[in-house]
Figure 1 (cartoon, rainbow, N blue to C red):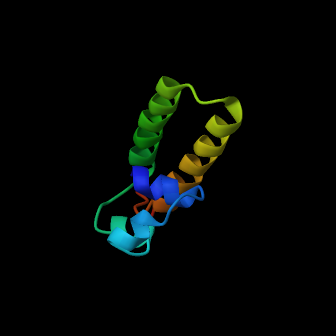
Figure 2 (figure 1 turned 90 degrees about the horizontal axis):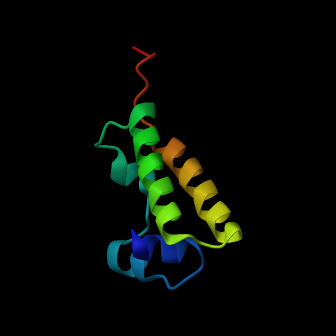
Length: 81
């Protein structure tokens, strides 16, 4: 995840060189991800951000990305049958 985040936020393209285009939804498609899984993952990411105590601007940037990315990964909706 580190090399992905480095690349996403403008660092070197190591992730893409080693693993190809991120294609997050495609890479996660085989795993059922519902809103509960999204929320659990976000709680873990929030705890990780709290542990590293980034300056507020960077914390907000990461948290915004994590929320958007987590919601985009949802591929299972129990309300649709």
